[in-house]
Length: 637
Image 1 (cartoon, rainbow, N blue to C red):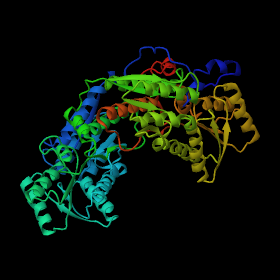
Image 2: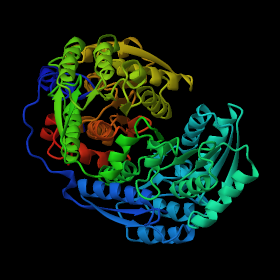
Image 3: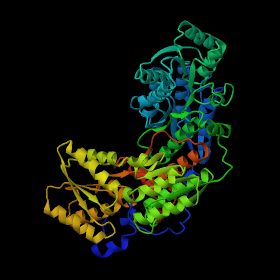
Image 4: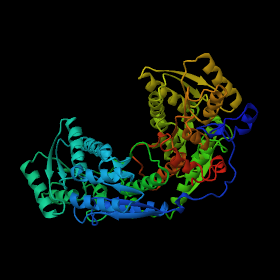
């Protein structure tokens, strides 16, 4: 049983319990104790794709997967059929699952053939990550998440670019018959071009028969002279289309665009640079392979994964950035040149949540040859954080990672940094402010959605009147959590009261919660938006002997609230996975600084709901040498 402290002992645990939340406390951390590295124990990940060994795209994806396997001590078992044969891939999936890996990564170009064996693996208890193609089949196959490109959206982006170039009649080339991703690309292209009055004809070719494919495209262009644009859905289609357009001497009249990047023969990036092609839609295969294995390894060890898919594309490569993107593909995995990344957060040094974020950031810095300059204010003072952001920007780092708990104070200095050309990644809080501050993307939790997740769990537990505790006045993330909670509970007829407390005054906060419960006996659920609120609410419920009668839930994780979940005193904890959050933020910043590329959409590391069913496995992440590990933010073990 978790025993909440008496009034006398409460103040002595402020830095251990109350400072575990999203943004509670202060000071610069001292050196952490050496702790066990989670990568010390090797895990096996089976990866089965439909990609061919002689395809440059899949060579890049495999290289990324192998790099992640090296970084995370993974026994990577990669396999692919010798031809684009879904039956052969299905057999490889069955064989891979039979080896009982800790997790699997699969592609699903043909759901009709592949869904069965993948579902069988997932049902047997193997965590499955879908990569590259198959985002719409996650529920069908029992997979956890997806890493890759939104192909319909990518097709729309291609349609926008073609329309801006004056294309009104286009051909979309599909080079692999059974691949649903290619169909989605053409569908998105067709939808977007139709919005400007354009039309699209789909041409199916055999990508492995280049001469036949070239002839088929040339015939389509000859039969319909009105065609003034060709979109290839992959490198093989680009090669055939380029040859067909050149053979007809139609390069000036017919615009050419393609999906996926090649710096080999055919070299579509050179074609963009010299004007033979308008653009390449890049889904960043190296990053795609890397992130898929990274997600699989994290899930295998700790039972956690990003809440939403990681979209590595679409990223449009044009004449403006083709030279920089070329450097990525000519030096994939090569990180000899050390770069600097500044990271300025509002998190306090003795707060274990922020210590875990910093530990993740430091591990990413090590993995990606980054000189990480981390800074945070001594107190939760937005003016002090703004000053640190200005100072960090003045040192001319290659990229910057920031948090935005107070937009009114922090927007201007961040905008000043991004306006100078510095790539800025927003982390932890500030997802809705990307355009306002000129940031490239966000890594963290969707706070409103997280509140809704908590509301769903509370409603299922029978809560009809909830109390939502905000422990830090100026933090918009906590307000968003309560708003989402309120929205979701009201959808089932429930109501929510919001209570503001001072998270640094644990005794007073507990008294405020207790008073609210006494004044309104209809309250049958309490949601803490962070660990200071959780400690105060737990103490109040204990003093009133109200555990069970009043349901308790919390945001963010400590060994204390995980134990409370295990023994039934708390219903759940909403985890945003701080170690992964810090890691991914620095990873994204480093990739952007080197190669001018980043995930197309935000990476949502949370919300991930921890209940009695999975709390024991998650506890492995935070326990280790607890309480010292969690208190000092040591590397998860």
